[in-house]
Structure formats: structure tokens, C-alpha cells
Image (tube, rainbow, N blue to C red; front, side, top):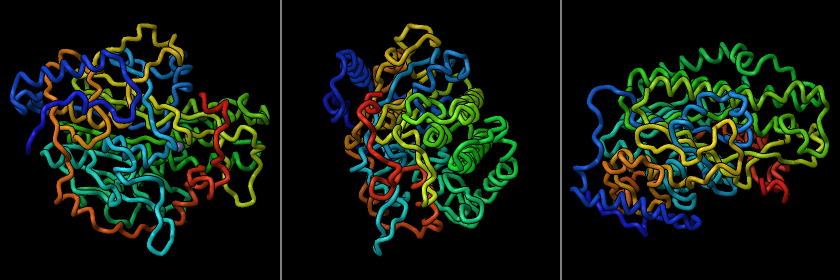
Length: 499
Ligand SMILES: [Zn+2]
């Protein structure tokens, strides 16, 4: 494979705003470091023996700094606080409209939605039906393909649009966008489903991992009580419906946690280990008006606020516990990347939130306009933050923008000593790397990772997806299906846009 030298102009984002001069200097330092040796000899070598993954990438859907900051202040997100003290943190710019499958595929590929091909939740089938995008619709390699093809080990759990799974070196556990379970139990998103092939690679592990999901299923009432307390939704019947329709997200996150824990035991020397968690996004959509009632024209009843105001903070506290558990499992030599695809804010602020005739939920939190997400990077590869204020005193204005969602994949590749595709739209976040680490890496480029053979293999049509109809109903309930299909996704007001 021909390796190209770093080209500073090429490494700047094509659509990003101009950055500080320090960025160019940092990239220049990487370029100079790269010139001191051959293209491959100076890449940081993987430590011998089992030492935990090189990078643990925690994909946390819809994390909003405006929710995080008061929790940090109260000492209620101690694990994120520890990571922030160890590393660098800020906002991550995203795209609008910010839709999870689109943005998470951008994170995994370093490419814009137009290039990677996952442009929405659904596409039209040849007979005009709406069907979910699948892994087969992605037109470019994702991190798990690039690593596998380079002989590196990666574990990917619950990432969007990974069903059906592709062969990898390591393990790939899909977020299975098949909704067979929904018909029977109303459990729909991002977890594994009995009776459907192609959810786990290697395939012989699928049944074993499904057993963990079965355990979670049995324990779900207890898990919900443990994470959220005894939530008794009051007021509109829609509140009860919203609560009942959130359990699947907890089921999914807990299943991913258990699968991650098991795979960390078995594959504790992966180069990249990624886990996706989505409950914070789901409850954000459904319960924002109880979290921030003053943002709404029709303030909910006080007893309803009392009953449901803590659902969102408790989801964040629980996510913090998940982060802490996984971070403790891997130790200090692992680079931790906590990344969210977008933030969240109040939505439908003029709505009465009366039950709709069609039974669909009206969301009170949304991110259609692409509010920035959270990024926190800690570990031997990263420098510490230049924000010197104590974590518990931080305000929104103190948070620097650290990059764009497209920058995650190139940064991961650079840390692992793998070449960055020149056709990627992001750049290496060189200014966030620890100078000592940065000296050791040699940022390399290839024209593209997408070889003609690999592209040819993408020609296969998407597999039949069972449960499509239910999947669509579930996403409509979340307000994801666009204006023509869901009245719940009204455009944000001017005041919300500035949030
Ligand atoms: Zn969302």
C-alpha cells in the first residue's frame, strides 16, 4: 500500500470554520515528526501481552452539555468528571438535520453523509416501501473494516447500521434494526433479536450473546427501578405511554454493557473497542418538558413534573456509571474517547401535549437543528484541557469546540498508527494529542481505504429486514421521520436555535 506523507492543507476540514493558528502548528509538528522516519517504522507499537484495548470509544447518543454541567456541579457524574480532569473536553460540531444513523456513520467513516450513503433512517425499496438503511447501504469503509483489513483487532457493539454484520477481525455485535420483538413485547431498537441471522460476527457467538439479552429481559423491571426509582407517570396518558415506550432503550444499553463486559474479558487487547449507549437520547426526546418545564408555554402539572423531572438526569447518572465501569475495566493505558453525536434541547414548546388520535407521542426534546455534542478524550495519547476552571464551576461558555464529528475516525486512525484516507472529510485532532505521544506518531495517508474489490463487494442488495413496519412506527413516535411523516418534528423556534 502506498503511504502518502502528511499534507497540511489536505488535513484541514473542508467545511469547518477557520481554526486557530495553533492547530496548523500542531499539525506541522506531526508532519515534522513523521519526516524523521520511514512511513511505517515510527508508528506506536502495540504493547506486548494483554493490556486492554488501545482505544475505548464510548458512543453516547444525544448527550447535552446543558444537562451534564449541573450534574457535574452536584458531583453526580463523577466518572465523567475524572475523565475530564485527566484529559481534554469540549463540544463537537455536528450536522443538521442531526439523525443518529447518519451522524454515527459519519463518526465511524470520517465522511459526510453524501459520501457514506446512510442519509436517513429509511430509504425507499424498489416497490416504494420505506425500509431501514442497513450496513449494506454504507458506501465506504468504517473503522471496523479499516482496522480488520490492516490486521488490527476491533470490537464494535451496538453501532448504528451495523446489521447485517460484516466480517471483522475481532467481534461485531449489531444494533439490529429488525423489530420482530416489537410485535410481541414492544421492544424495538438497537438490540439483538431471536431468530434473525447476521447480528453477531463471528456468527457462532450469536446464540451465546443472545442469552445475555434474555437475562436483561428478565431483569428489566428491576433494572428500571434501580436506575430511575419508582417512576409513576401521571397527567396525560401520553406520559404513561412515553414511559412504557422507553424501557427498550434501557434493555439495549444494559445488553450492550453486559456484552462489552464479556468481550473485554476475552478480547482485552483490541486496538479499538467501541460501545454504543442510547437511553439518554430516548428519554431526552420524551421527558424534556418535565426536566425543563419553564421552556414550555403550557407548563405541565406540578405533580407530573415531580414524578418525571428526574428521568433525564437519572439517565445521565446511569450513563456515567456505565462509563465508570468500562473505564475501570480497561485501566490507565487505554485511551478513552467519550463522544456524542449531537446535543438536545426543548422542542414543540407551544404544544399542549394532548394525546393524539393516531396514538403517536409528541416529543418535547429534539436535536433536528444539530446542537453540538460532547467530546471528552483522556489517556496517554491526549493532552489535558487548557480550561483551567474547576470542573464543577464550568459554564457553557467555558467549553471550547474541539472538532467536528468527521474528525473522530481520522484521529482514531492516527493514534493507532494507521493511514488516513485522503477522501475522508475530517482531520486528525492533532492539537488535542499529548506532545510526547504526538512525537511518536507518524500520520500517514492513503488516497482511499475503499479498494475496488471492497467497493465491488458492496453491490449486494440490502437483505430483507423483518419488522420494518414496527421499526417505522417506533421512529415516528420518537419524531424522527421528517415533517411529511411526523407532525411531531416541527422546526425549532428561533429562540431554541440559539441553544
Ligand atoms: Zn434522538
